[in-house]
Image (cartoon, rainbow, N blue to C red; front, top):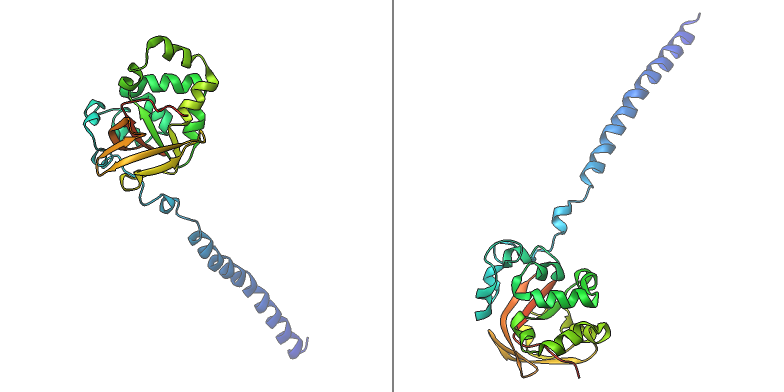
Length: 212
């Protein structure tokens, strides 16, 4: 075998031997960017979401004293649940929850994104004669009309609350006042305001709002 042929074969074997190392090197370098490109899901959480620790510090009104101080029905508990579920744990809103269930609005309210709810306290429903209240609870279309009149698209802070707002029912409500003193439609006082839930801001009122 000539010297030139032998040198050519050695060169071919040497080149072939280096190919696995080149491939391995490319695979190693390409895997690093892929690992780094995985998104950090924790960074996608809204920065302004109320935490359980500061939920109670945001509320105002004398009626807030009636809300439980611990458990699912407390302010720190309600902030972790969608609005209908949050209300169901709060004994102050038990009659409202009964009405929401009768109207079949639990899923509608829980799945809504960014709403404001004027939530009548039990004392608000107590102002309605029992016979009239039972009649409304048995009339699903009328009950739905009344309850959706208490819901506004968009979460309103106390600074945004005063003014006229369109409701999900289609009519409007007018809120007057400022600071921590608000009245809806001239009759319903906000007794506990700016209550955060997972998908809504709640203002508990002392009268049921009636659409025109």
